[in-house]
Amino acid sequence: MNLSLRISLGIFMLLIGNAAAQELITNPSAGKVLYQAHCLRCHGDRGDGKGSDVHSLVVPPRDFHTPESTARNEYELRSIIIWGLVFSDMHNWGYRLTSQEIRDVISYIRQLAPFQPRI
Ligand code: HEC
Image 1 (spheres, helix red, strand yellow):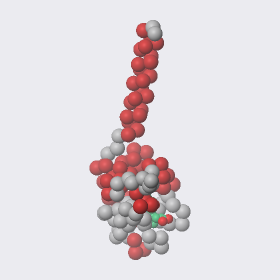
Image 2: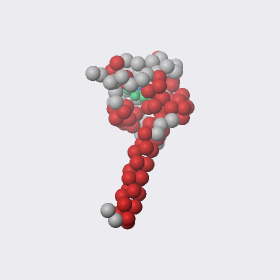
Image 3: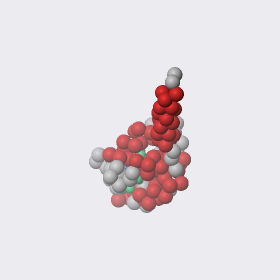
Image 4: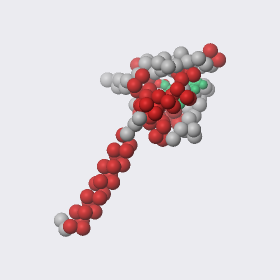
C-alpha cells in the first residue's frame, strides 16, 4: 500500500472512530438536570410515575421500573421522547430537546431504572 493511501485510510478510520465514540458519550448528570426540569412533575423523582402533577392526568405516566419499560431499547425510548405518545400527556419533546439532551435524559432514566432486555 502506498503512503498516501495509508494516510487517507488512517484519516478515514480516525473520523469513523471519532463519530462512533461521540455517539456513545452521554452525561447522566446533565440528564438529571433536564429530567428534573421537564419530566419530574409527571414521572416522579424515582421514575415510578408518581410526580406531583399526576392527579390531573387522565392517562397515568408509566413507571420506568416495570419489566415492559426496562426492556425498551434505546431506539424505542428515543422515539417516545421525540414523538410523544398519542392520547396522553406524554408530549413530543423532539422540538424542545436536542439529540444530545435526549441521549442524556435517557442515560439518567437508565440510572433510575437500568436496562433489562427480555430474553
Ligand atoms: C405532563 C406529564 C408528563 C411529562 C411532563 C412527561 N411525561 Fe413521559 N409520560 C407521560 C405519560 C402520561 C406517559 C404514558 C402514556 C401512555 O401510557 O400512553 C409517559 C410515558 C413516557 C415514556 C414511555 C415509558 C415506557 O416504557 O412506556 C417515556 C420514555 C417518557 N414518558 C419519558 C419522558 C421524558 C424523558 C420526559 C421529560 C423530557 C417526560 N416523559 C415528560 C407523561 C409525562
